[in-house]
Image (cartoon, rainbow, N blue to C red; front, top):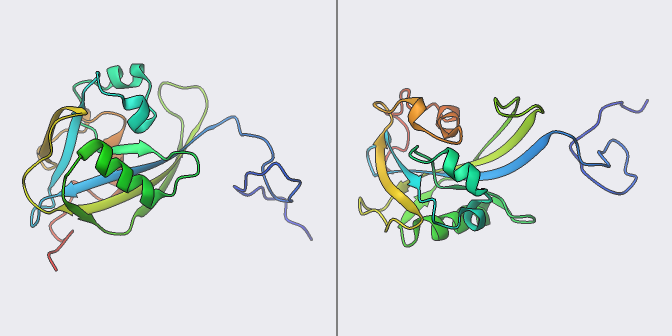
Length: 186
């Protein structure tokens, strides 16, 4: 007996058990970089977006989205480009948003959330590739495309200080709660 389930297989062909038209819900595929200095996983690199920088090109963000989150901390992140793999996206984010920053990261943690955003009337589905890594040094890159870029102590930062729901990404990793065992030095 054939199943009545519809799988997340988006296709224009007549393949069974697939979605043949775009759903009414929004779907985003994104990559996030979460960097900490060696030996201090409670510190995380975040920035405040420079509204003059081309965030439409770097992350697929409209000017209104950047202005809405002005003055709040966000993680280096981007929607994936159409046809781009998450590892390539992570490297692109590193180069475009953090320049010559020297860092290493672990394989991505995959997270998915389906929810109703406060500002919308339809549900939203996020598929997120989260890269947790270590900075090679405490020297931070130049500011462009950031207004401010710094290491924030998650034990002292309030969720309201973060924009674009990036505090949810940190919570997915169990941060700021007991991160003392995370990223142990090899």
